[in-house]
Length: 186
Image (cartoon, rainbow, N blue to C red; front, side, top):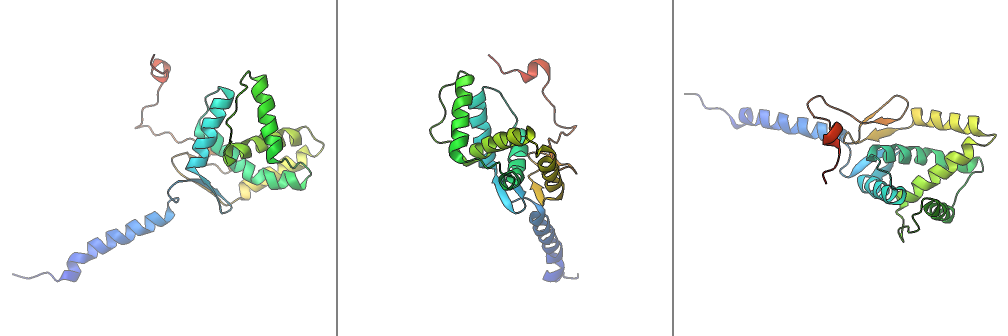
């Protein structure tokens, strides 16, 4: 009876371990929703901004919508700042306060998350730029930055399009709620 040498027994284990390490190197870092040119947007930041937006506006929104906005904010802020459309944190807080009053929601969280401030800054800068004489140039530059950026997205949120947008991924084997199933019980 022939005996197997230990090296022959270990080859499949070593090969499997090497494949696992190679695949792990391709995955996003734990807790990362996306990276934009090396800047990390954490899952916690997306969750915080989503929760604050829903509480603030009273409108449900998917985390992928907030993540798309935070990705664009990362790229628009330096472009808008350079074009003369800088917005301070204090201006964002004031904007939120004014919007809350208009929405009949006089209370804001005492301490808005950095991600929620970034979301507000994007909304303010985008609106300001869109109605300015610089709109075409700035928004074209934003579009170029989006397509050329080094973007990585956690597959939990969706897939990246060629235009730099994140679209939710649906799988045939996962049932999607429709009609009554989509409504909360109660």
